[in-house]
Image (cartoon, rainbow, N blue to C red):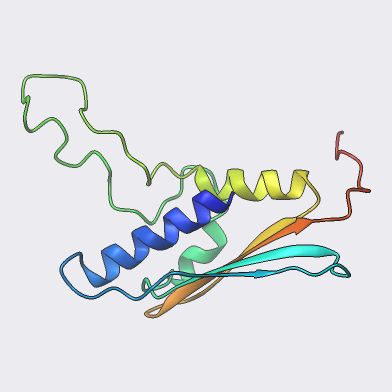
Length: 136
């Protein structure tokens, strides 16, 4: 879950600022305390944010804001039917799956975005250990 959120932030920062320019840091803040109900991990980036019109769809499988991963794949072997690269982003499974895992373990994943600036992702993880498995 955390890997997915950090990976998305790093990708967004690189795409928004370009690899040649100076990139702002991706900040990770962990709120934990003995009396806290949850451990909350906040991942903040300045990667340009997500368009407000896309926000309801970020939890849908196969939806992605990433550029196509396979664009230009196979240029080094033009007659080959096999892609030679392996995408780390852009398949549309990361956020929905991460939120499902977080909810399964009694937490949640929330995303707040400011288009043109960046995104904050909040990963809530239950620390109580007194919740039952949410089985049907």
